[in-house]
Length: 221
Image (tube, rainbow, N blue to C red; front, side, top):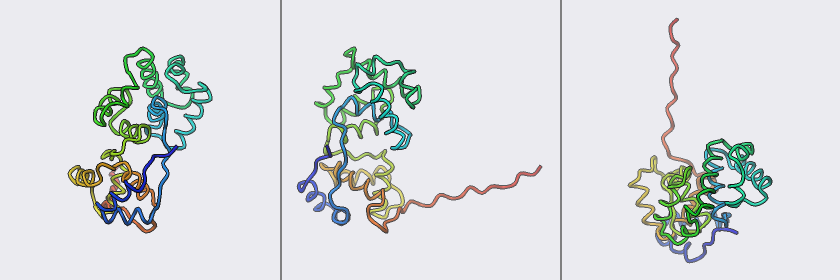
């Protein structure tokens, strides 16, 4: 299953922004796969923090093989050490265990997240151990299909903005200008900015200032 968007979202963004309209024409339709299960989506995002997509896929495959199906009950029944042995850090294993325990005990009602506004859902998810704002935003976009998620904390989004609009730096004020322009279809804009950042349009460059090389001096003996 893929994130659903169509002519309504595309035509709106094209009317609002000529440069983004050009990029959309160059790239065409993008299919971004969804996590359809909210619990599994949260666990997958915790697993994937600070590791490559390939490493995340490997650990997730091991988790599914060990548990058969990743549910609050199956995770709750496993020990943190058992989860750690699948290739994740002990801290991540403890975060996942804590999350499953809160679901099983009824302390956290996952189904209510779907009924909350974007900011309320982000706040609720961010109260879980191991979940920050960026992770919560990605869950809202790629699991709940919220239509207006554009994350300032996403480095690839910032890179896409620099590349498309020739900015050297994306400040919060500048970001908010684009966020307002794209709203209420920020999620569709985000999907195209990720594609731009990943090199979907040949010849586009990142205008961020080059990092200065650290000059090494030989220390006298």
